[in-house]
Image 1 (cartoon, rainbow, N blue to C red):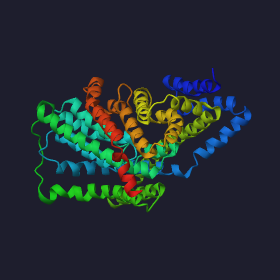
Image 2 (tube, helix red, strand yellow):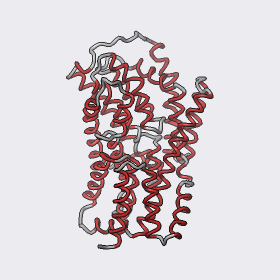
Image 3 (cartoon, rainbow, N blue to C red):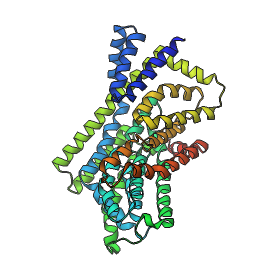
Image 4 (spheres, rainbow, N blue to C red):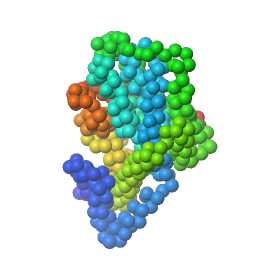
Amino acid sequence: MSAWVIAAWLMLGGSTVLLFIGMPVALTFITVNIVGAYVYMGGEAGLAQLARSSVSSITAFSLTPIPLFVLMGEVLFHTGLALKVIEGIERLIRRVPGRLAVVAVVAGTVFSAISGSTIATTAMLGSLMLPVMLSKGYHPTLATGPIMAIGAVDMLIPPSALTVLLGSLSGISISKLLIGGVLPGLILSVAFVLWIVLRVRFAPHLAPATEDQPGYTGWERWKPFFLYVLPTLSIFGIVVGALAQGWATPTECAALGAFATLVLAACYRALSFDALLKALKGTAAISGMILFIILGATTFAQILSFSGASNGLVQLIMGQGWSTGAIVAGMMLMLIFLGIFVDQVSMMMITLPIFMPIVQALAIDPVWFGVMFLICMQLGLLLPPHGLLLMTMRGVAPPSVTMAHIFRAVVPYVLMSLLLLAAVFWLPGIATGLPRRFG
């Protein structure tokens, strides 16, 4: 057996086993890294190099957008601005089948444009809108499905902390990756709304035919939109506009977005000391976890390369004579399969050290590949039985909503995401058009 095969089994197999038995992601890869560094990098000298690489991996300037993007979402949720945005959207959407489910999708899309956390979006919409929909007689599958689905879309629409992480670990341009996710994310949001409207129109028992709605007219109907929704969306315009025009780097755009969010909250007199402290604590916890994971991921890739496992696996795949399309399709299928069992960060850490050398060797457009990678990770959030957003929904849903309801609720949205993945595969311009236009 070749030396690189043994190294691949030790590093990839060892990390997979530890993840499946429940060890935290960061500790899993740090444990495997210590063993790999000692075996393949010269004992104590390898451990010293491991320490140096770990420090340099988390001091990279390209990672600074992560805490800033997370802070934007934390401020939005802890200051109560999210409630005002929901109110503004709810007043505008009237006489639509499944109105509250549509409101959840539209509100989730707005939150995606300012929040860097998929879990926070799902938890917030689930705790606020799910009880209202159930009390109005909505079927549990119609009430929970849109909330989970639009929470997953948060990963595609900037600002997204996981997109920054993917760009940093893969070497793909972070700004192009952020812009590339905009159109696929909006396509999914529109598809979700159309599905809800058509589903309720043909199966009206899923949602009440009429709902008690206050009769807002004129300025009273539009006031919350102009006061809260439009200013919130303007932050998204500032961040993406500066990125698209090349006026600012991703880090500068993230700082601008975080500052604008704080100023907006202060203007509404919602930025209390308690709210700011909660937002900062949430940001520190999430960012610390991500950086700890990056520490393990970067050195994991280095040891795989040093041991010869990365090159050996790449040569093995390239030597099969498969077409570029078949190889890319195989990589996407592997990501979807992994999404059933492991979280999104683990997917990146296990596959990127192998996938990116193949992408480079075949001269595949990295932005196209990166956006499809994001769609596969978005699918992983929704795939039973361990999808992270399924567990999040279970945590905020009342006992009357069972796991069977939750599993059935996500099926149509998973199918729509698969159709989007196929569309991006066959029509790369969906992912690369905007980055090329503004790059």
